[in-house]
Length: 155
Image 1 (tube, helix red, strand yellow):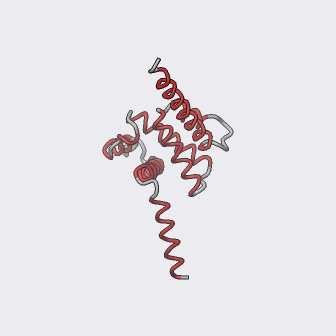
Image 2 (cartoon, rainbow, N blue to C red):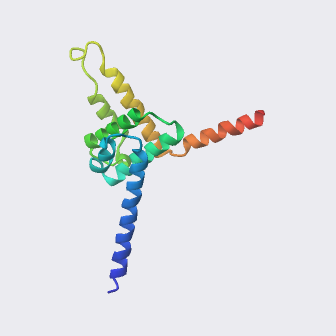
């Protein structure tokens, strides 16, 4: 009988955690006409990675207000990256990401017009932004505060 309250408390904590994940997924994917980005976050990613992507999308919405197609691309790319490397985002190394990006390159005979470069650069920039945010989530806010404080000194 003494173990029952502990198990019940753990189950309640698990339900609250799932509820938080669901709320963040809904916030991150609001505005879409299809359920594709939402199902990608729910079904194709682990809980930890889905929470990280949802938090990143929410932070992007707060800071830069991206278009829906950019949000959808970001979700697709990060889920593709996660499936290709098969690790949690916090466990991925620089070499893992560079190896994945190198697989996206195409040789000259396969793509003589170099059309792969545009998508490669977008994947590179998206991964840089995501991992900078993942490891330094408050840096953008700090830079904004520093800029505002330097402007207030001038005025």
